[in-house]
Each structure stands twice: as C-alpha cells, then as structure tokens.
Image 1 (tube, rainbow, N blue to C red):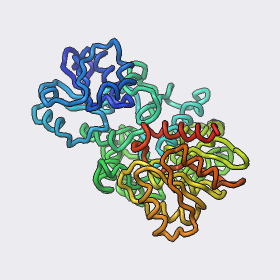
Image 2: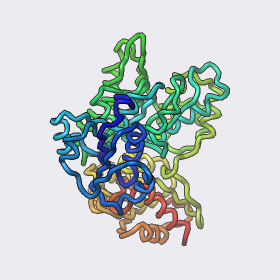
Image 3: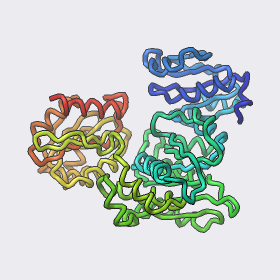
Image 4: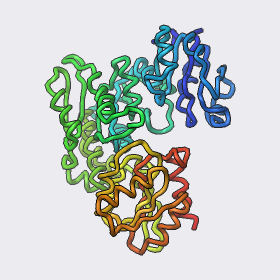
Amino acid sequence: MTTNSLVGKRVVVMGLGRFGGGLDSAVFAVNAGAKVLATDLAKPEELSKTLKQLEGLAIEYRLGEHRMEDFTTADAIIANPAIPPDNKFLAAAHQAGVTITSQVELFFLLCPAPIVGITGSNGKSTTTSLIYHLLSVGAGQKQNISYNNVWLSGNIGDRPLLGMLDQIQPNDLVVLELSSFQIEQLGRIAAAPQVAVITNLTPNHLDRHGTFEAYCAAKELIFSSQKCSPNNPCVSIFNAEDPITRGWYEKYKSQPGRISALFHPDDVPADTAKVFTLVGRANRANLAAALKVAWHFGLAKDRILAAVGSFQSLPDRLQFVAEINGIRWYNDSKATTPISAIAALEGVDEPKILIAGGYDKHLPFDELGKVIARRVKAVVLLGQTAEKIQTAIQNAGGKNVILRRADSMPQAVKICRELARPGDVVLMSPACASWDMFENYQQRARIFTESVLNR
C-alpha cells in the first residue's frame, strides 16, 4: 500500500482511542486524500481531547457505536492496536475482501530508513530511550558511523509515527518501542525491524492474548519475520538471563545473514556502570541491551560513556519525587506488571513501604507476594487486585508485613505518611495497569506526586 493508493478511497479508522491512538492514522489518511470515517465505541465527550486535535479535517465520525456496513463497504480499514484480531467487524470486513491494515504496518511499508525495534514485557521503554539516547547523543561528530538523524516513536512518547514519514531520510535511523499488539499486526505482512531487541518475557496482557504461550508467540514474530540474508543482514538481540529468549537465540543464531547476540547485566563495563544513574539490576540489563545496539552501529567508547552519563530516568519509572522528613518517595507508576514491581523493589535497599494494586490483567502475583514478604515492611493496597495481592503476600508467609487498604491514591499516600519513619522509602510501584481508577498510568503518577508534595 502507498499513499497514492488511498486517494479517493473510503478509509475507516477503527478506534480513535481516548488517548489519541487513532489520531495519527486519521490525519495520515486525510492527508493521503482518502475519504475518512473514524469510528469508536466511546462517546464524543469521552474522546474530546482527540476530537479537538482533529478539528478542521474532513473526517466523518461514527461515535458511540460501530456499524457493520461501515466495515464491509470500506476500501480499507486502519485498525487501532487495541482492537483484537478476532474482532467481529474486522472478520466481516476480511470476508468482504476489504484491506485491513494498521498504523504500524503502514509505517513499516513506507519508512525509507532502517528500523531498530525494541519489545519485551518490562524495561522496553527505558531500553528504547537508552538506545535512542546513545545513538543520537553518542554519535557526537558522526565519526565512523553510517547514519545521520535518529527518530524515536512507536509505543512511547508523543511523536506521531506516520506524521514523521515525510521527514525521515534513507540514511537516518528509526528507534521504535513495539508492543505485542503492534507486533501481532506486523505479523500480517511479515514485517519486522532490521535490528530487533527483546528485554525479557513475563506474563502480560493475558486479558488479550489468553495464555502466556500466545503472548510469547506474538512477541517472537519480531524475530521470525526479520528478513535476513548474507546480502542484507539483520540483527537479533536476546536476554541471556531469560530462558525463553535465550532459547530463541539458540533457535535463530545459525540462520545465514542473521547477527545474533545475547546481553547480560554483567556485560556493562565498569567505567560505564559507574556513570549510569539508574538503580537496580534490571536497569543494568536495559543498559546492556542498549550497548549491544550502540556497539553494532560503531559508536566510539568515549562517546558512549558521555551519553550514558547524561541519561536520565524516564518519567514514572522509579522516578525520585522528594525527600520529606527523612523519607524518600519514588514514583514507579509505569510498573504495570508484577515483574516490573519486583525489579523496583529489588533496586532499592532501604526499608520500603509499597503502594500497589490496580486494574486486573489476570496476571499471577505469587512471585510478587514472595518478594514483598521478604523485602517490604508495609503495603498499602488499592484497586481491583488488592485482594489478590494480599492473598499472595499471606500465602508467601508475609505475616510481619503491615497490610492496609486505601480507596484512593491520596488516601494511600496519607496512610504511607503515617507508617513511614526517617530512612524509609515509599515506593508507588503498582504491579498493575491503572484503568480501574485512572485514565492512564500518567494520571496515576500525577495524583501520587501531587499527594506527596501537597501536604
């Protein structure tokens, strides 16, 4: 598909999203000369932020409902990644011979530059940002490297994916964070990045994929769809400590044209580790993955060292908020899985009070319960999963862990303030998504931070 092929065509953008998930696709289709219908089950008032950004564009809207005839009579459908592939409207459109695509598929078809893609269950945003930072800041005066500009997008940040296309040149690099949903969509066209990195695999999005095995199968497409040949080599980077991804390394390493590598936290040179400001073994693993990419593109050691030293923690990822009366407060709202909360708990040494709980993605909390029982002095639980997490702590023998419940984030902060003593760390690392009580993890972080600072 090309932009010219959309001229005069009826294009349905399925799923604008409350946070603008379909906004980029809608703007792209309009600019390509298509007749655009944007449809979403949410009502106009729920989509106000997105609709405001689309004001003045020639778009027809169908909000608060989907109509089957819109899908079966379209020339093409651009589906939001949040739409499951077995959706009944997409199934009917497919049967009617309608072209079904997505934002990420269009980008891979049209992008003229090589793509570095990062996925995984935890740490992918930090790893993506590290890779972007190293490749852009670390490039310095462009010594002995083969690219010019570096672009960052995908499942991270606010830069529109398709909106970048007219600025990207063939000798640039594009760094993308890719979710399992996006990789699943890319699987329809057997597309993958030239350089693919996976941070780790732990159960996630089981409400969508059903089983951990299905989730892993979606992630593996980032490697199985790579076009590797001696004349056009691809790069595949795997986590040495993750048994599944290490198994994939063994599976793919001998393929002609594929450059395979393993990363390990201990790969980070001592001088580089010394200037790295992020705490914890998990972040050292993220850095190790990023270094593999930087070394592949030929960045000089001194430039890498300078870039690592200037990298700052991403917002809402084990982010220091304040020290008040000898108590340090950390915002780790992006920790939306048990394993990411475990990484945060193991990255902080001081006595800890944890705020956890949220939307139920049907993930197991057994391991989190064991870590809490061993490393946490008090937990304040809220949201849909509060009972499940409490049960996991009790089953792990955490009888000395103080357990409290809260109905809101401000109340949770208030309870933590009452429990904390000088020298303690209060860590908001929910281990769950935010959608039961908040618009997104950013709003959860904002309310937490405001509650800490506005006493």
